[in-house]
Image 1 (cartoon, rainbow, N blue to C red):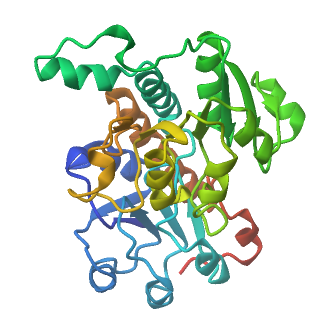
Image 2: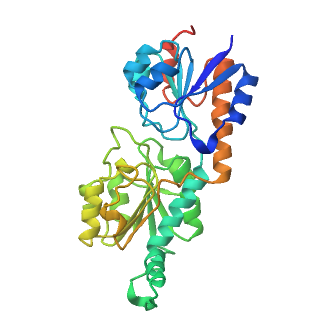
Image 3: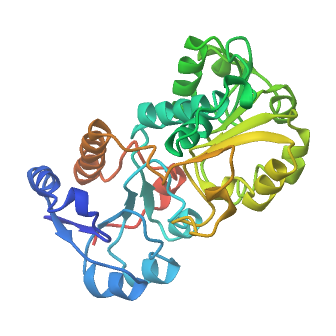
Length: 331
């Protein structure tokens, strides 16, 4: 039996999905490329597909899951899967998968790049040079990074990669992770701390947690108040993890020394967002996970998940493993 795999919202840079189609065909499946913008489009185009591939659009609500009884697996192209209602999928016997290894090195590099730009005021001086100015070296306070403290909130694959790079820069690394044991935190070279200790002890904080109901606005006004005067925060995870309005207030008040952001509460970032014009904020357009190597690795990893599922009706990349005992039967 040929397993149908439906790509809901194609990404132009991956089109025409020649690599994916060949790998999936060799595994015993058939890849169908849709063009969906709404849940209704998914219903009209997905047919009897068993596997749904989702890039970015949040258009597979519970009603769609109910109306497509052949669907047994939904895979997100990437590490984060907040576009999928995992609880609803689990209740319906649907597995949810992702590409957990995707772009860990790339996002870590971007976090460090943002940190260096903020701490060394690279962007601040750059803009003045573009305007024809020649600013005095001490026209903006800069502190030597070596010997200062980087606090990590979340230390999974990406957080661990950031820790390794930060140690190489001479930073002391401390970390809070809700899931990992203290020994696991120490194993990647960081010193375990509580959330409050990370906030209070860090000169720089980098956030590496997935977006969920529990982590939405995890970093809020109360957290900013606990941070050191002049601290810098970096976010390459998901925008809503940080309360953006509270962040803007903390920077405007002078309590925070700046921020490096690749992600935002609303994307694309509004043209009139204050973040676009704040002197000590460095922003990039949710591109941290991109590199030529990362894109190729993503294609390989997603195809591996699909092939594993076709072969075993299961995958090690399933993020809701509790569903296995109640998985929808294959039609």
